[in-house]
Amino acid sequence: MSSIVILISGRGSNMEAIVRAAQKDAWPAQIAAVISNRPDAAGLDFARSHGIQTAVLDHRTFQDRASFDAQLVELIDSFNPDLVVLAGFMRILTGDFVRHYAGKLLNIHPSLLPLFPGLHTHEQALAAGVSEHGATVHFVTEALDHGPMVIQAKVPVLPGDTADTLAKRVLKQEHVIYPRAVRWFIDNRLSIRDNQVIVSPAEAQILISTDQ
Ligand code: GRF
Image 1 (spheres, rainbow, N blue to C red):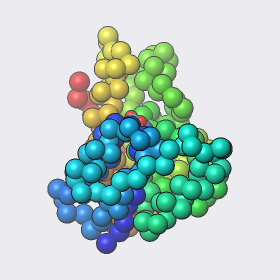
Image 2: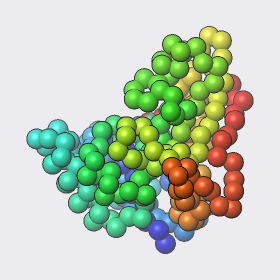
Image 3: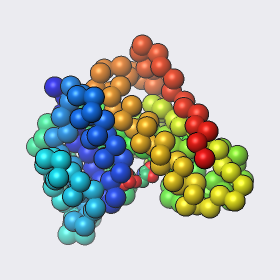
Image 4: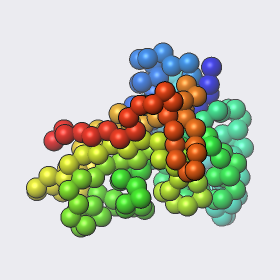
């Protein structure tokens, strides 16, 4: 049985999608803990009410990024995870942290990487005038919002879209692709060759949604 630790900072809807999929499909995995860097993260309530252990490590009580990350590694490792899932965890991670979890650290980013790394991706997409947008699940490497891509979901950008309407359309697909990527990982279906993620047996790594 694999063990998964999920890191959140806020709403936690991606974490929720993963927890629900794990329960519904009886994954051979347990969500060992949900950890937040913010004590008021709404997602913590959902995790607690689903019998999942939670922990808070408030970054504001640390002097610097390195000491926070070192403590976070200790906390995460106390749960012996096979996989660490960043689900809206709004922290830039140190190289030490990322190297420690090399090959077992996943993130979701709300854009079709390598387009629009960083924050405000929906605003960036609208400003660029692209006709499609989406989300990417990727392995985390030291480059911010980069790393081998596991799966992407594409959605159309529609006339009249605002950052909010677009974010909502993208988020719906995030809840489809993130549980799928995590399931592939725990089923040992992912490997990385030349910076590219291979899924075996092969399955579509791009989802095209026409949902409005
Ligand atoms: C999502 O859009 C995710 O892609 C980004 O932050 C947001 C987190 O939302 N990294 P939630 O906390 O999972 O609801």
